[in-house]
Length: 291
Image (cartoon, rainbow, N blue to C red):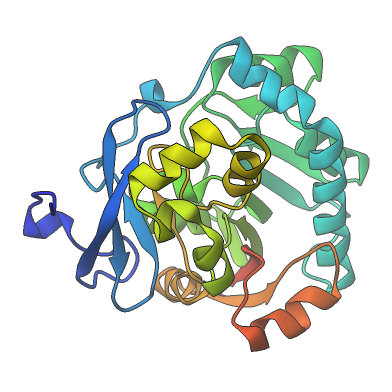
């Protein structure tokens, strides 16, 4: 049965177009059924449309959440070093006196790498335990807060990182506008979200099969269940509430007076030919319009 929602909520978080109800998916936290919607125009997907305002209480906390950040040190360090190297090669960023901001920096591995590469690095992290680790253990400059307009003066940073954050917030356009406001004219934003394209939709069991069938696979088939979960982009409809298409990223850039410079992948050849197949890396460099 189609869930009851108000007309005002049934609009795309990016382009404002009418959404269509797709199906119900089991919530990964509460176990309740979560309605999934799709945009008819930009082909993005959304869950938890009733979630309108993010607060500090919405942020995961505790030892388990902190451990996740601590265990990702090697991955984050390598990823950020490669992102900054790529941006430097393209002359989108200069190591000399460049100012970097990482929104949702976790315990600060990205900031440590940026500092090692000669950048002035600042982070914003809403999880108290992660922010404390960054400031006390790693001696990094991290603000414990949800990112919001006014946290920094306009046009403060040369380069901003927003990696695996935007899919969690209820008002992505508003947040992105605030982030770009902190960026200098012609400054560059590295934006990464879980990639959604036709291949990911095709192999996502939560999207393709009835909720009961997915639950049977989870309970009865060990290795198959692990494989299914690993390729299911819609497995976490309570945490990941927005699933942005490549088209949506372009719309977001335009609405923020910016443009998409390129898609990114550690294997440089992938973005060059993936786009011809309708595939997405989920990682983009966006540039703010110049003064």
